[in-house]
Length: 182
Image: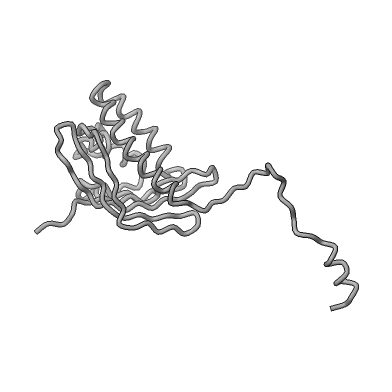
């Protein structure tokens, strides 16, 4: 290399970051994943409580807001396989399909009675594992849901979260099923 270029290179220093400069990282943390899962469980209970106190219409309004905040329908289709669905409506890639599953009342999904309307009072999430890769995180484990009578339902759950430009985690894959039994 020519000595002229070496001298110029030595004058260039590493960029500095101002003390209060905002820094954005799309890398997801385990804490963010756990918080997103907890928010989902809290929302399920809130929708159930809203239904009990204010009826189906109020529960549907809240559920729609939850879907907008927690799911990535603004990014494209969400790969949503609810627990208690069957063909031909097993998979829901639209917000309307997810909303129908959670609160019922949609003639396009006549078999949906509203999973979120079952009197849920508590949600516990037990992850078998969390895989984080940059702005995407996947989880797999159990969701243990208790209703107002104390009955417990356990479902196998897989979620994939995508961190969006606004720094929020959005669910882009939601697969749920009942545990296998003989």
